[in-house]
Structures are given as C-alpha cells and as structure tokens.
Length: 304
Image 1 (tube, helix red, strand yellow):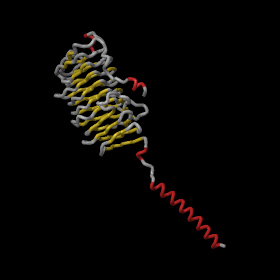
Image 2 (cartoon, helix red, strand yellow):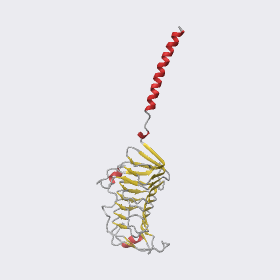
Image 3 (cartoon, helix red, strand yellow):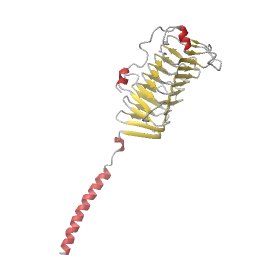
Image 4 (tube, one colour):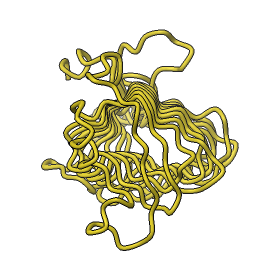
C-alpha cells in the first residue's frame, strides 16, 4: 500500500515539475522587450549610431547627451523631449529637429522642455552646436523653452525656422555662425538673439522678437537684421562693439524715430554704456507690423 501511495505521489510530483519547468522556460525565452517602453531616459549618454526619435515615446535627457561626429539624431515632428536639471545636448555631428526644410507645411511640433513640474528659465542648459561645421542640421517646427541658452550655435550654420523660443535666459546665441534665423517667435526671454564673432553674416529675418528684456544683443555688425517685428522689448537692440550697425525695414512698435531711438542702446546712450560702441542706423523702418513675420502656425500651439 505504501509503495503504491509512493508511486502515486511521485507521479503527481513529476507532473507538477514538468508544468513548472515548462512555464519557467517559456518566460526565460520570451523576456519583456525594453524597447517597447514608452519612456526613454538617457543619462550622460553618447550616441554610437544614427537614431530617430518618434512621437510614440517620451524622451528624458539627464546630464549630457552627445551626438558625436558622423552621427545623426533625427527628432521627428510630434515628439517631446524633456531635460533634467542642467542637462545639455551637445552636437558634434548632425541634429535634425522637426519638419524637413523641403516639406511645405509644418503639421506637428517638437517640444524641447524642462522635466520639472514647475518649470522656470535656466532649468536645463540647452543645445550646444560645438564647432560642427555641418550644413545639414536644422530646427523647424519646434518649441524650445526653459533653457539657459536654448540654441548655442558655434561656428556652424543650421537653419532655425518656424519655431517658438520662449522663457529662456537666452533664446539663440550665434558665435561665428552664418545661421538663418527666420519666421520664429522669440519671446519672454532675457535675451532674444545674441550675435558675436566676425567674418560671418547670420541672417535674422521675419521674426517676432518681442517681450524680451533685450531683443537683440549684437557684437557682430555683419549680421543681417531686417523685416523683423522688434516691439514690446525693454530694449529692442543693444550694440556692444565699437563698429556701426545698419539694420533696416524692421518694425519697432511705432513709427516715431525718437521712440525707436529710446529702445536702442548704442553710442548715443552714454549714460547706459561702459565701453566704446558704434551707432545703430535703423532707417528706413516700417510704419506698421510686418504681417508675415514670426511663427506661421499659431493654431498648432493653441492645440497643445
């Protein structure tokens, strides 16, 4: 009797072991694929190959993310990238953000923003184009906010078009760059656009540069600054180099030359300057707001 009972017990135990072993093997051979996660966190990371970021995922950058030489990061329209405290995106390769320049319309925006629940300017460092000399990078159809310097562009010349840059310490800094800055809304920053360096001619055209403490801080008098709306800044333009600067066909918020002069800092403002600077020649200027300047897709902002 005991032998029969023992045989029966061993038979049942064997069946349980087979079932358990089968289940364990199945789980081991089919692990959860981490690439299926909808949230991607990158901390002090360097890309090793070309990558495309898509709207199906939310990306968070902590520390420094580097795009090395010969590597391309493509951030597709509709994607959101959040940045942790003092995070920095360093570009030594190629960065393509948003809608390609050859495509006629922007239909979705890329958001580059702070991960903080209560965000503020200078939460993250920004995007640094570090002497890449490439001709392929672009930012088109993006909202960039809460950075120290949202776009710090050094000796490279990306196109920045149809973007909103807001609530940054500095929205765009151009150092030795021929970048094209066009059809953007640059607002609510301490400084909208800063240009330094020589022998380059960045083109700053058809933008709304408004509600900043300083709209444009200029140390590169070769800069082409025209057909912009430069209204409602504390100072629309500050010249900080000893050479003269010619800007033309901009709207300064009114058509009174005296009022326009009051929002420009140059050699005529001796009480406000501490170094030798040149004179800003701002005529001719437009008598009314330039209708086709600025971010051309405001309804996309309203939908977010």
